[in-house]
Image 1 (cartoon, rainbow, N blue to C red):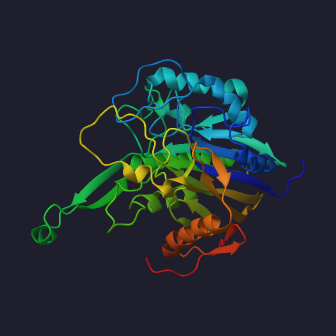
Image 2: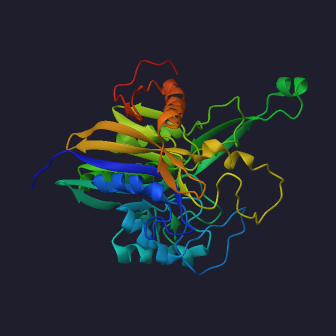
Image 3: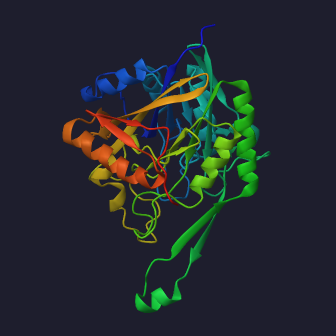
Length: 377
């Protein structure tokens, strides 16, 4: 069988409420789906269970979508999805099981969730142009009871311990100042995730890991990095185990891009398609206390994302193109052009610079250098 270069399209958060392809609901999205179809494989984060059953979880927001919308994913050209996210158990185990069965019936690979931890950590392997690609999903975003275990269904977990550093001198000078936040992953979860990556890589030429992690825009004090302390060490462990690409999501905005040993790490690809949270629209909160201010999740920058087109061959990642995307008023994706594309790429370049990642701009697209510049951390 011929083994040649191939392209994987990666995008961030996707939450469906209505048709996205069939019926031409958003004609401007057609160019996005054309890029999906031009890619050899497409991997996305499905941010909602596909179910009509179950009761909503006791949390701020609970999402779900009509299982019939799975046809929209296949029509768009999606090959695999990660279910490892903080909304997959919004309607309980029944909602998860319905999602797994619905996706299996259509041939879309589902990773990051299962009836046991072993199932949740299992890869979906797809072949394109003679190359076998293993996809996996992990989440550090774990509502109570959502983590899969040997005797419990759920999502593939990497638990994180969060520590708050109280600056007494700073509080004396500025009362009510936010604490500085530190974080670290549970070592045993990192070990299990790394073992899953290594096992998947033994089955395939390439390994792509979707990770639901990080902190949403507005949820971290402005004096801290938007990328949490635990994220880069986790990325390093996964890459050391054999991951070729790490595709991150959850913050609902773009975060910087890292390159570790020639392997791209997308800390957050942003909101790709999100019908329930757009400018001026937000789902009804089920828990109104504490009285958080949610404006940061429905601001203009929440509309920006990128599609990463990752070109690979048997030796690994050879190139990465960045295609700026903006959600329209209905929450559907459209290609960004001109000033919007320049703004998105400039923001991404600024956020990637601390990691030594260089982004060259050519028209409305960007390209990542897989040889990072020297940077002091």
